[in-house]
Image (cartoon, rainbow, N blue to C red; front, side):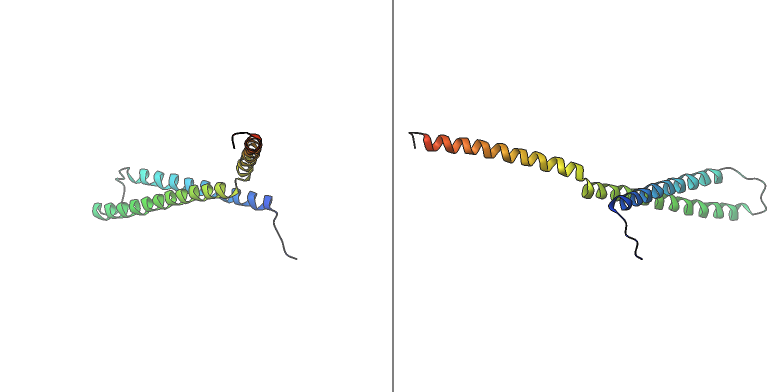
Length: 125
């Protein structure tokens, strides 16, 4: 038995996916930023030498900063995906635009008909 999704279900799943991605990326950025701030505290109760401790903290900061950059890039990709989705699936706007074009076409046809009638009944042909 194959499971097929209706367009509404697919849309809801996609929007839920976007929401999940947004929450995960923001959570990642926040957690990594908090951890970087924790590393800025001076910890005098350590058994590691100062040089080893500095190297370890510098490495951890680089990793956490890279994680923040990755989350930021993921957020930019998410914004791009949402824009693309809206452009391709904004049927309400497309229908409204189509209606305006149809009305314009009808108005132009009426005006052209009147102009043709005026031209052919004119004595100044």
